[in-house]
Each structure stands twice: as C-alpha cells, then as structure tokens.
Image: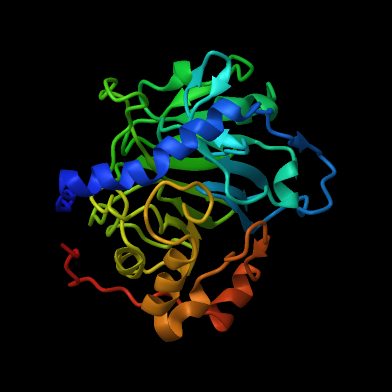
Length: 322
C-alpha cells in the first residue's frame, strides 16, 4: 500500500464523534426518511448523448462520468440520510446540501462502480431508485450480496485483474482504506478503479489515506479523488495537501475533487477541504475541475487538449506525508 498514516489519539476520535453523532441520531429518529427522488431519462438534455469524457460531482463521493460513449456512476448516494435501517428508519447522518438538478434526472447508466461497502458509498435506497436490468454493477470482493436484487449482473472486481464492461476496460486497485460495513465484516474488499474507454482513462480513487499505491498509474485524463473527512480521520482519508501530492505523482491531466461538503463525517468546516486543495495547487489550480456541485465538466477533444491544458507535474521522488 505504500506507507501508513498514524492513527489519531482515541480521545480525539471520541470527542469528534460526541460533537456530531448524538444530534444526528436524534434527527434520524425524527426524520421520515423519504426515498431518493431521482429518475433515469435516456433523452436527458443535461448530458451529451455520446460523451468522450465528461464528469459531474453529485455530492459527497458520487460522480457521474461519461467516457467512451458510456455513462457510469461511482458510489451513487442520493438519500437525505445514510446509515443502517433500524425500526423502519435510517439512523445516521443527514445530507447538508440539496441534490443537484443533474442528479435528479440522470442519463441512462451503463455501469455503476462501488468502491467499498461503507454507508456513504453503498446506499441501497439510491441503488434501488436507479435500478435497471441493463445496468452492470461492479463492486469489491465479498460485497455483491449487498447490491439490490434489481440488478441482475453484479461483478466483484479483484485487485489488479482487468475486466471488460460494455466496451470499457476496468482495473481495480488497492487504496489505503478498509471495506467493513458494520465493523465486524472486516474481510470485505475495497477498491479504487481505473476505467478506460474511447482512448480516455479515468481514475476513481474512492476513499484512501495517503499512499504511494497509485504512483505507477499513467495517462490518466481525470482523477476523481476524495479531499474531505480527514479531521481527525487522516489515517483513512488523506488531507487536501496529501491528495494534491498523490495527484502530482500520478501526473494526471485533471482532478475532480469529491468526498466533501455533503455529510458531517468529520470536524473540518465544510468549505475547508476545497480551500486547502486550491491553496496547495497554487498556480496549477486550473487543473482542478468540476468544483461546483452538479457542474458538468467536459474535456476538450483529445486532439485539442494537449495544446490547451497542462498535466500535473509528476513528483517521482516525492515522499508520502507522515
């Protein structure tokens, strides 16, 4: 995995949880927990019909990506609240921002990629809301049974084992994280994904602490990387500065920042992750795209891109932050 981050002191973790979770549990009990209001429209006017490379951040870790003429979703979570269902109610964290318009009416989805089984990444109500027998779901090892039965084709992707999904070449990579859903199911897998189609390559990092595991990646056009939920959880979620360093070592062309400003998972202010990322990027902040919730970013045509944008400067000798 490439190094390991030191765990925070237990006292900090306890204080962090005590500041948020009791209020969230009370709000959960009072909430009716309405199902996600989201639909699929094959004629969706907000998304091009044959995307070469496009992407939109839909909130938290949810990303809509168009690549090689296909539309895919990564970790779709559209519910107002996430967590286990107890006595008919979702007991967990509430959403702090509305769904963007593009998330409420999606184009036809060819494939869904789940990075791991945590409730903020694998949300069963959201999956049921967009279920389609023609949509393939790709998920880590030992998680297929968590996917709603409305999806007849579910593929468990093992690390470093390429597979083909509707003309897309997919390889799962091991991030620095874990996959347990309820704490004791520690044997569940957890993935990052490289997805290639139409000559374009996208990297969906999922959740990860700082790691050198992604350094060998090449020719990445867009890297969707989590930048939030690090305080005090930096042993599981990289800080914005660490994310920028990982991005530079990959040498990708663009970054789409995700996993921030949606659910109150951690102690940092909701605006802080993006502000710190932009500060770390400095004069290369033009490489950070899709910053606004629901904004559909489209890459320039492949022939034009080399002359209109730079890649992040690789740092082959950079060391992982401690």
